[in-house]
Length: 337
Ligand code: NDP
Image 1: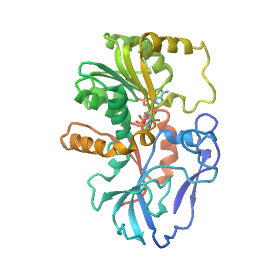
Image 2 (image 1 turned 30 degrees about the horizontal axis):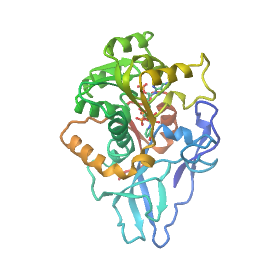
Image 3 (image 1 turned 60 degrees about the vertical axis):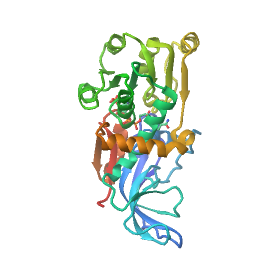
């Protein structure tokens, strides 16, 4: 069993030495347990938070423990009446080849799913996050302007495409010309602005000439600073993630803009609400799965994956994800089916 453990806690940006790849014995399932062999492992921004020794909505990973994360696996050995060998499973198995489970928290994906890795992305946590955050908190109406950053990632790309299906005008924000082209040409966004451009703020204001009705917050930082003055009266801001801050070790330098933020929320009656997908919406997964399954089957939603081969390349892919080096949902292929 190859696995990646947390070797030390990062100061700022994670480095290779914060992780350790080791090989240990394959675990042996007891009566009532299954042995799962991972095929695909998920990489997600929230994993950075788990590396800190700080209380968040979930506990940190302990030093020398396996890094946490979702996996798509097949049953290799079953001592459990509900599971048979070969069956595909979505599990929370961590960054490793093998895990033993008593069945708790497993989701069956069938004997022969057409796209097993989709359970980590468009049909799983990121897709579900986009769907609930946009529709329940963002409550978009036809004709409104929606802005979303990390526009080509699994959450942002899905937010924008669902907003298009709801008749909105969609402005994406992404890093670089290639991602912006993808957002417009493949995902069907109306506009996409490169946040690395020197005149990013001016470009965003120019394409949001009717203001912003829904800002789906994925990144924070300078992107939020550019969005804030453009928010319309009655705007909604689902606060989903703040990836530009995940490697930060202190608050940014001043000036202090808290009173500007509070004043804007007050005067414009803006609703700003954070959410943690499974804690807040876990019981609504079936509703999402039905809609998203249908949209995918009808070709109404495009989905881009970046498959990285080999557990040994997972650490570098994770460090890159936090810097925008990924293009689409990052999935690590660790074993052949
Ligand atoms: P992505 O693949 O979109 O995340 C990485 C992207 O973030 C990068 O490719 C990059 O895109 C962008 N990014 C990184 N740093 C910066 C920066 N400094 N400024 C602007 N953009 C930056 O990941 P996901 O789609 O999986 O996640 C998107 C967000 O949703 C994350 O913040 C994540 O934590 C959050 N999330 C929250 C959940 C919840 O329950 N609340 C559940 C799932 C995700 P680019 O190159 O285009 O800038």
